[in-house]
Length: 164
Image (cartoon, rainbow, N blue to C red; front, side):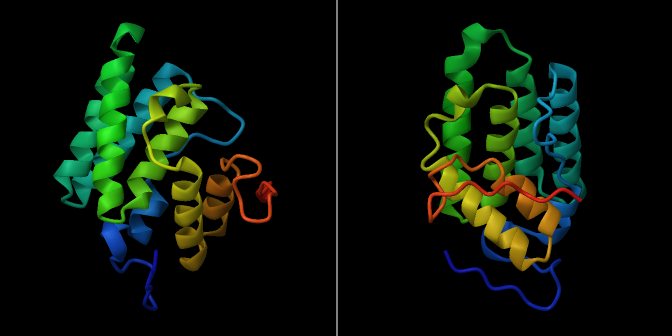
């Protein structure tokens, strides 16, 4: 994946990923699994971020994810299918940002089985972490990199992140 960034991180790049979205998207804190209420607030906040940027499709994806997270476990098949379809759709256009945020939320909730249809999750996270680094968003890069499974990173070492 080639990423071209001008002087301003706010410029739109491949797949609609944007620095201003990265600043405003809410992710669970590493090592602190969110409860269901916090996960709901994360989905609502991320939906608002995209709605405020006139990206109704991505806003709707977060709203639907919230509805599915509140549904009973018997609906997990439907949810896993939704996550797979959303991931494939956005990855096709090169938007690793929204897919990474969804992967991180579900993984932190202990619901990684819902991401089983997402192609190469660690690669998705690695690409997004690289983009964040290019934008100079070191804290965000570290938070995303910490979610990459050990051995999935080139060189075989997990990035431990940076305490700031």
